[in-house]
Image (tube, rainbow, N blue to C red):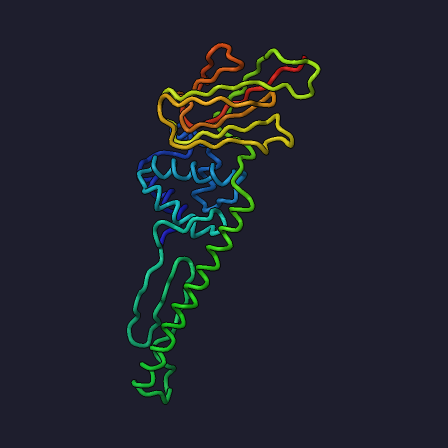
Length: 273
């Protein structure tokens, strides 16, 4: 079976485009795309961005993005607390003298169905042995899968996917000023965000919070007309899957628009006085 990287590379070659052309079309850095095609997923990206980039690239190449993410969940079982949506395991029966492979999730065990040449076992004895071994294998495989799911859930509950940093592509930095008490050590601002179109994912990080980047807001499946206000400690960064649909206002000032479109992030910081 072809790996994730092989499927991505073959799909790109069928489209007749280079990594650079794919980078320009998807707005995803070329070295990330090259790493994906080499089955290297241990990159400097938070899990939520790794999933988003891989899903967007698969969709661009005409592959099933959910199937690709399911393969990634099996390849990296600790990446999230969810089980794979599509099972990649299979049960195949070998011919006489071969092996029977039983797969459940990502746990696979093989049981010989034919005794070694010269074995004194009769056909009835072999059938009895196989009847005992099959339930044992299935129970063991199910137990291992259950343990893996429990470990993944504990990991997710103890350490949520906080966005330590926005995606490396399409970073826009803006600087501004706001009226506040100059004697305060942290100058709070009121940020108002509004959606002028559908936004699949929006993550707002309060960079001025203490400690930095430990306070963040995650919003999903936003529709046109959504609006929400936030109290921010002087600076923030905002990631959106559709920057062209975002509008933001600082302290009831002028309505501002990110200058780029598509998935990406922008940073707003308060200038020092």
